[in-house]
Length: 115
Image 1 (cartoon, rainbow, N blue to C red):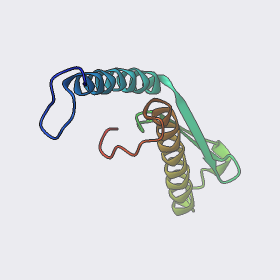
Image 2 (image 1 turned 180 degrees about the vertical axis):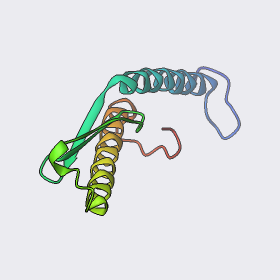
Image 3 (image 1 turned 45 degrees about the vertical axis):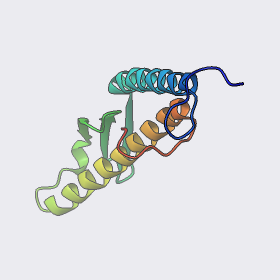
């Protein structure tokens, strides 16, 4: 004879409570990871290091570093392209870092919209 009241769908009440506790624990861990990610930074360069973009774990652009020798008033388009490339790559690295850290909490579960 099983212990605990059966819930609709045949699930014992105790199992549902345990599952809810696990979900709450996972949510708490995810919130802690998100807080840690706010202070972590990743960077990416373009143009052989001429432009560096630094992004935090929330995918916010923190700073841009531009080597003075790449600033050519005659070729602003190239500088703009380098900036876009560096920011795009840094954002991609931040996304990968976030996914890697969150998967430690979720155990690789695909939970769309959770972060």
